[in-house]
Length: 286
Image (cartoon, rainbow, N blue to C red; front, side, top):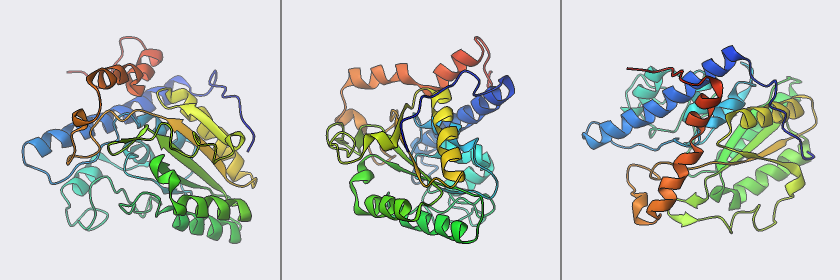
């Protein structure tokens, strides 16, 4: 799809902004709570979506019969899609009543009623099944779309290229979203991701600042409308920050400079969105 100018001037009304802000805070506070529980020895594993919360702005454009194939940084997206804090707590504790029956890692979101497909740990493996879901919708003549997200490091893997090729060949109703936080666990990807290397056609990708919730929502609206209208797949490249360690088994202070970690806080999507939504208003206040 051709480059698009992102018009955010009339994107979100006041009610939607406040509703979305509450979702962003629920996601952030859920991550912080799980981190705290891990430190107390009351959990086994945590993988965070902190810094990636603006992706919830894409979820507001999806309909009930659309499908989502998210990856493990998509906590806010899945919360906006309809996952409750209780659902996420069941998954964190690997309870039998969780959507996976306690068989999945935390952050590997799934919900049959919400059409959220269970994410496998190797990022990118879910993209071809996402194509299968979109192809099935297309063959059935359904007006639905499939959201499929991944990190920039997995955009170097074969699954990604196979999925993009198949989606373009069949003109599938898909929205591919690469969430670029510039680091693959502990390795910088700034100069090695496929956009930086010129492997991908930049004219086909909407590139958006992931610290700007309204811009992400605008990109999502354009991409979802494109895919739903039968014009084939749409592509978003979202520049985000990873505020947390890769997972609870990691300490990013070992490989990221202190000034880099401090500077990232200026790009907090929740704080920036809250500031623009209503100065002084906070959805959670003691």
